[in-house]
View (cartoon, rainbow, N blue to C red):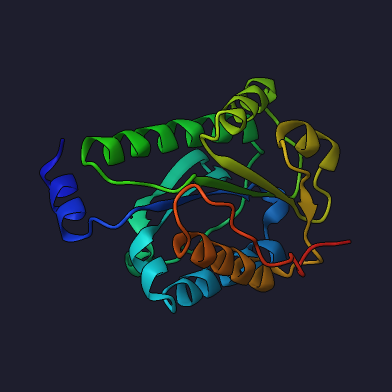
Length: 217
């Protein structure tokens, strides 16, 4: 156990609500899409701290896949301390590897909670992509199915523009949603409000999420 971990959990022993973003930064996201995604992340940063409990309980982590391969660009940090990164886009779409890394990152974080006696809500993985995986994704899909069936996490997939919704529906247990245009601001407001609802609920209880008005019906 690290000293920093000890201090972190002593200073704030609240239950944690981890939310891991898996963000596609492949070449097809360059230009308007990546600009809109960055704007959405800034919106999320500003909105999540409006709720006193969410800013102490929600933890945000980010893994990108595309530009520079699979990169963990934000370790888990409480929402109060989250600073939206500025992403750039290039390269291919190693989605399978990103999902596997995300599952590992969440397992490690849950171990840290357990070691410090910190309660936690079911973690979220929230993945956004505008394409199809350029690597093997079948093992990642099995990992998601296994984690979902054990209530180890909740996995959400959002397709943008030309995303391969057929493959996304094979990876995700709950049906993937398609974003209306590049409406990332409303998407991230929804994510913020959903995390606020979860972090204000009792651990283990079903939380009604707001309707996803940003999705194509």
